[in-house]
Picture 1 (cartoon, rainbow, N blue to C red):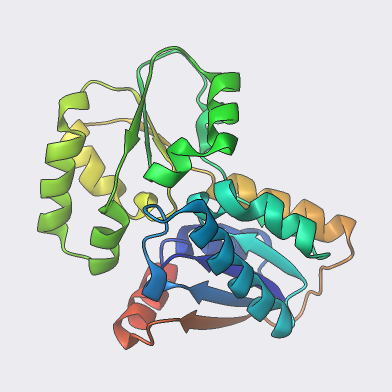
Picture 2: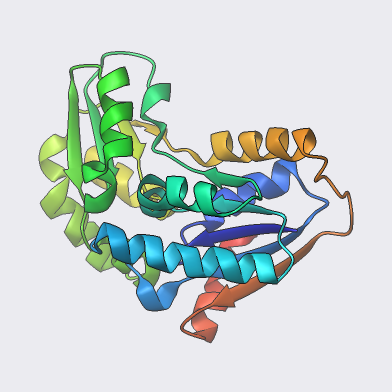
Length: 238
């Protein structure tokens, strides 16, 4: 069984890619809405939260974990990999896939941008024409689902970057608002890590003989027990 977790429902963007590549598996999707957003928490808080989630998912029978949250991946993946013996797959902003030196905007949480892991990634692939933008509070608005508020937020934060060619979506929530970002910036090239992490998960599962090819089953867990979150999750998944 594959465990997937995120600070909310944003990781559905990762799960959708996993289902395309690994359709015949059982999944538990863990939406930690009660602790959302992760991006404004301390590193110790993020590690502690992630540790508890991974332990829970393992207790439920998961044999591989996918961290579908850029913040948790950047902060907690090394700790989790050192502590647990099962494979733990971590997403990262798809900055290295940006193919040229055109003006690029990286949208991510404060914790992701400030993390050592992202700094190493950025310094390695820096195209010297990139703006790093901390989008505090945006994941919350996406969870809320109010388009007017989202557009207002984007106007105030990214409106001044009209003319960028590439936008790296460094949070799994952000691909859910590509249309709204396009309304503000115009046509841009989007990059996110969902497909890459799904492909990597399949390779790791094959290498570790974890492919089951059983009947597909998806269990949704939300820590706030909010039925609206569950309804939105399955709506987005379809």
